[in-house]
Amino acid sequence: MSYRIRPGKPLTREVVRVARIQYAGAIGMLRDQPRGPHEAIHDARKRFKRLRGLFRLVRAAAPEFCARENARVRDIAAGLSTVRDATALVEAMGHLMASDAASSHLPALAAIRDRLAARRDRIASAETDLDTRIAAAIAGCEDGIAALSGLKLPKGKARAVELLARGVARNYGRAVGALEAATASGHAEDWHDLRKHIKYHRMHVQLMSPAWPGDMAMRAEIADLAGEALGDDHDLANLEALITADPDAIGNAAEIATLRTVMAARSAELHAQVRGIVRNLLRDDRKLVQSRIAALWRDAAG
Image (cartoon, rainbow, N blue to C red):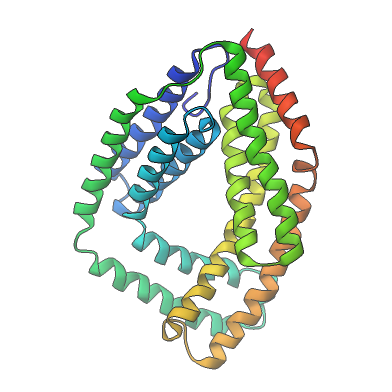
């Protein structure tokens, strides 16, 4: 129940409980580092995303608090992102090379992957202040825990139901709009916007899963599949950004042209895959989703 809101319990207490668990988990991982500092950072960043999803769910009732704490968590994560971002590009090349689009271009892509791996290693070697930044992140988490005492959410079951159902539905509606925009434009930023709202939807149904465990688990699984595909697509956009900013990190003009050809084909595959995955997930009207969530939560709260 570490990332679940329990129906019928005081909402402020539940949100604070869930947030504290996420902060405490990040602190423990960053301190203990059982699989090394970079894996610890990767795990902590997942917890930071869950915190942002939690604050987004209830922000209509505490907009100033949620905006401030969302910014806090965002900044903590940003301070730990350098090597992780470089590693993600290497992983993106591995995924790209495993795709059908890459089958006739593997030597060129392997050379690019090796350069990106060397770049990652150089960045990691230059990170002489990593311990300092980890310590700063831990301190930021401790400040975040202390700040939770200032959260005030509506009291009473009826107001809690309304807030939670509206929070789920608001993000859901934005996901529907983002899918329409991305499908129409094909722009990377629109697909990234869809990814963001799909990931938040997954978090929200996980938080609300005690209301209807089977259905919520199914929605979370579908959203997770879509999020993985959209994450792969976002990594390709980040590769394109690196090509623009530092083409020498990738290779010569011919290699870059090959990479872009494969990336375009793979991105088209991923977009088609995502449309198929979310077709049923995002088929309902926002108001219907809100009323359904409210009814389920009201029944579960007793």
